[in-house]
Image (tube, one colour):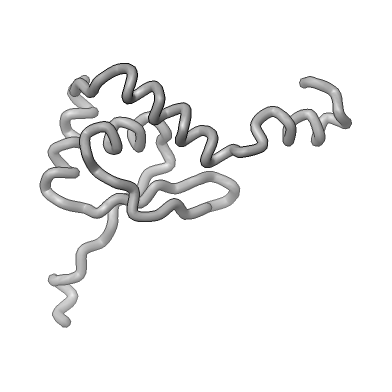
Length: 94
């Protein structure tokens, strides 16, 4: 296979961008971890590039869908929520 035929995926650690892309119809291919941060990997297509431009130019997606998707991504990337913070603070709420 010629290297020009290999498509490099697009990835981001930005939860808001990932939520926007999901709402715009671009599924997450995988979630990776880099230094304790989640990295959302998307298939890099011309439609995805257009969605990135839309995001940068205040593009619109349904607000409730965006909010719910953002909440779900936060839960996926930090399933223990505040419990991990409390444990690291000796059981006390920071």
